[in-house]
Length: 301
Ligand SMILES: [Zn+2]
Image (cartoon, rainbow, N blue to C red; front, top):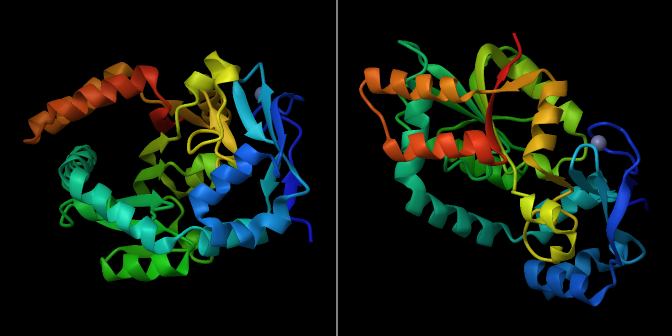
């Protein structure tokens, strides 16, 4: 069975890249990481299916973008996310994160709803996981939607009162959302353009699109720092490693512009006029606006 799709050209500019780190999947560091991360028993599910392939990181110098040459195709990928990853552990982790961040999430949602006067807006968390972020706001001001494929998560989301959309129903929601969140998702996806084209269709013209991926800066600064660990180039899962520039370049190509410093000031000012402002969130937004791979975008007009 073919388990991987081979990607030799840059996913952003299509140029040929150069390999910066290549090991067999039988390399002891990689095997150690996979056993630690998934557990020895779960690792056995994928062991035979990956052992003849290389973990090869390729870099495009003109985009400052890194990708894994071999990306798992559908069967391996769904086995990985449905059977290999421990769902119980993942839910516990998400619940703990929710407990510690509930207030912050609530403020984030508040800032969004304050941008739209006197309407109940539609918020989509694309790849919502267990839906804890979506569930943190005051539901009178927005309708929460999750795009999620895993059955276990879908059931959980429905119990929370979140509307769940999958790839069959998604076409009914074109030009529907005021805010779309893609948090720690794009690094997992094989086809970047298709996903962003879909987001563009789902967005209303005034939509705010929040995109966050792991920071790859350290790796771009010093390739010898590449380590096999949970992080921006994690084997099998994090297929794409972005710099801030490559993220903005890709989004620009697909019809998005990053929200400017002045627009961020204006968003928080609006929120202040409508009753609520969070200094913490304001500083976070300013920091992200200039320095991070967590960026707010709007559609090019
Ligand atoms: Zn490129």
